[in-house]
Length: 401
Image (cartoon, rainbow, N blue to C red; front, side, top):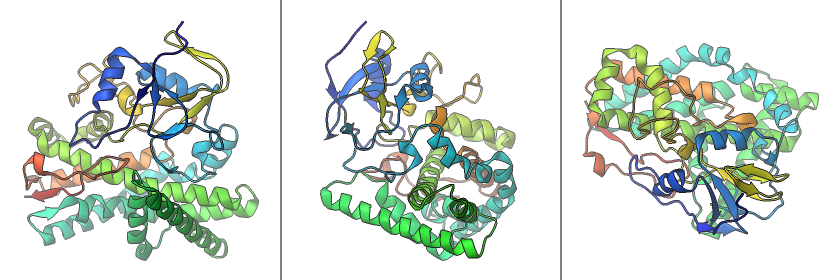
């Protein structure tokens, strides 16, 4: 059994297009349980990349997410979630908070929202058509669409949605210096105050939305103000940013893979399958996510993780594990179904996967139906990608039809 191995410095680079992180490819092949250092924070950590090992770490209670207040190496200068977010808690506390909004994000609730999402999408496509060709798909479709759908579900006034988009873009960045960290912390505090005020208004005027659900939980004493703020900020900012980028990435792949596009145009019933395969294939995150702490000694692949060690996993790397997904670098709609890890695994599985899936399905189906001749307006290598972003995606996507 191996106790320790030399630690390598890991810091994610800005990579163009669908370029997969070469460090992940190397670790998957040669060192699936690797010792790493990072540019920020303190100390060293383990990075786990293989599919089965990632599932093990993220579901075993001996790996705790109660990391706040402890020194650990990290990828950014700042924490993305707020200190009281469910990201930094374990069951049963974690389950107690998530349970509050579970029904709002259930399959039934999401399906009831689908007709509204389809109407929103067609309005976005109307604006795209009116603006071009050529026109920027991000500006007219993949950015406003997920915020509009999320706004309907959560109960965010339409006039406030552009401001939240700007806030999310700032918070989910790499923060190049301390001034950026201070600015981001100020933005999070401002958004938290906004949602606390919105929750308070729903207490007197409840509606059929997530903010009203949270307001009722707060009134019952199921959530305190810090938990309310942390949950609503997380849902609003991450919920928009992730779908904005993932959906844009999906369209980019569709427009650069003629075989995939032709097959989907011929059979729209394959769109849900395509969404799942694209979620697996697209390296949507830059770097790694939130750390865990080993609460006792644990062995993984003959490597001893000692009590108190920091452990990271990479869902992106796990989705390219060749032992699970042969030829992982190929989009294959006939691939045997093995659940991907794009939404995580275990107790900290994403709160809104059904919503994200539905939005992506509506987007792809609508584009294929209304704009069957959609194409990139520039060569693929000229598409600009968001710099310094934690969730990877095009900055703009110029299209024509």
